Length: 321
Ligand code: BDR
Ligand code: CA
Image 1 (tube, protein in one colour):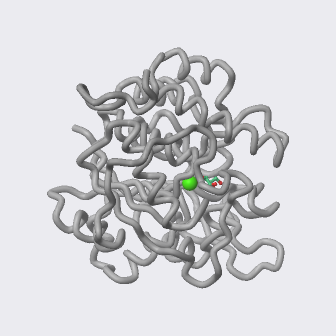
Image 2: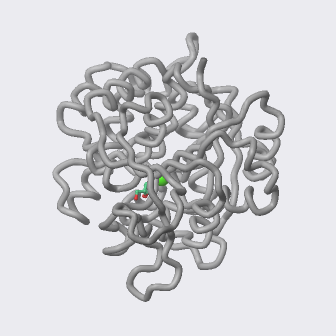
């Protein structure tokens, strides 16, 4: 049976791909999309979620906007990576998919308490909404089957030398989530840097011959140019769908169980995930940490999901093809 999931995201090029994988793969049942400030303001990330759903023909999945800023620090967006819109690159038509009037945290609470079985949360953004949910409604924790997040790293960072963007943007929220006791899987840079969208991957998406395939390839091309300029990468690491893929097929990602703590004070290391790979601290296991990606399985699922989606039958393509 399909695993019920909710994506909490800040689209964002790779978030867009995560939404498409979740909506297009039959192994998961996408119950909702919640948005948060991160790559851009929450107004822009919500608009982008609506844009992605519109071009993919994703209807009937509620979208709700959440927190406009981190719990304890000011918001610093990633326009250097994702552009001023948060989703620079392809042209998007005016979205026809609307957002709900409800706050993301209230929507999360309502779905978690009402769903017949526990739900898996897949955050691909700063953890502000999830931390607020667990603080405001602690009883919700038992309704969460697992949190499978994109964020952190066992070593290097990307926002700073030590800290990955999602954790660095709201370290206090990440600290609440990692201490929550909810089963947790961390898909960090160790594994997402293995999700490189090579020229072969781009050719497969373009080769679908659909508007959505071309939009995905355009998104990845923009993302790749940011990564080339900022980090010298040969191709774009498409981080966020890795967390979704882990839920779809756990064999796509190999994990180890260990303790992860979030550094809140370090002058040079605030927002770092301190991963006790060698069991040196004696702290209890609180997470599975992803280390290896089966790239072939991963891209097969992503391309198949994009192929399965597109505007509903009878609706004229906004791209005029
Ligand atoms: C993470 O940061 C964001 O820019 C991406 O969308 C991804 O979630 C990678 O560090
Ligand atoms: Ca993201």
